Length: 169
Image (cartoon, rainbow, N blue to C red):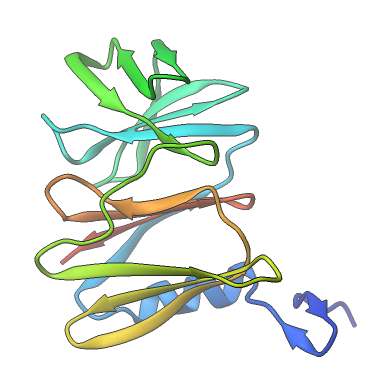
């Protein structure tokens, strides 16, 4: 029988099914989509259209509508040192990049927040706080980035398994 749980010593870490169960249990939020991104590098929420998010990977560049989960390929120019990007799908806007090598998304909104704790053994836990409840949404080796859109209505977590997007309901 195949096990979906990674074991480190006596410790079990969350797998993708457990993460999805945790996301689905957050009151006031629903999962919009989850998908794999090969060669993930950066993402950026739009300030002008907070439901849109740019995703940059080594394979392609896309914009996702976080309200529907619809992905569209696009073109973008970006600067990894300045942590900014410009995209033809989000014209006239400088986008702030976040990813494994820098940049940060909002960690708190009026209605929710995420708290990330990394231990000495490089295990990262992420807790989602909403409607007075705390939910462990990540417990494994580090992820690339997580946080909220500028309007606080969307949440993203990007790890080596892909990207998961939640929407406030």
